[in-house]
Amino acid sequence: MAELGVNIDHVATLRQARRTYEPDPVWAAVEAQLGGADGITVHLREDRRHIQDHDVERIKASCHVRLNLEMAATDEMVGIACRVKPHQAMLVPEGRQEVTTEGGLDVVGQLSRLKAIVARLHDAGLVTSAFIDPQPAQVEAAAAAGFDVCEIHTGAYARFFHEAGGAAGNGDVARQIAAITEAGRRITEAGMRFNAGHGLNYVNVGPIAAMAGLGELHIGHAIVSRAVFVGLREAVAQMKRLIV
Image (cartoon, rainbow, N blue to C red; front, side):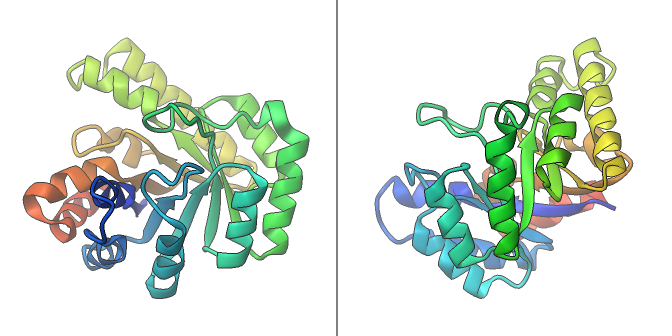
């Protein structure tokens, strides 16, 4: 049974739109936990567009479940992770002009540098995760770098699913499902944890949640969007019911 990690970045996005103190992401983390979240995810971006440094510290201090810190592979972010000590540090690619993360981390192209970063995070006692595209070469490189977890980027799957009107048998959708399934198999065979996320929502999550060996789904925007209408606790509970 897959677990659910809830990304609460966009609660902070709403707060930052007015540069004020509400809504508080700490409250969002509490509500998500009461709704059944198995983990909380926040992305501390270099431009601090939503989550702020003090949010990470306060959530870590009050969180009763795992805290997953998404971060760029930079000296600044590694230093923050080593100091705050989230339960997991997930390395993601990051571009200043992107609206959201647009693809997986290129572990193949920067293996030696990432291997050193992973070692530093391990020395701080952190579980390390790589956010990668469903490509065999990236899985192999992640294993070589020493990552504990690979989270497969499901953005392309979500896009094709939407364009096909939810037809899981559509060629592009089926190919994405096959690629993610194969990546998951390779991840678990390499001794890493298989997670998935990005673009998943209440309509498209089913085929991903049903995959063999899947450990955890990370979902944020869809849950926060539904929470506008039903409340965050209920939105999380509804998603939990879909993935068990």
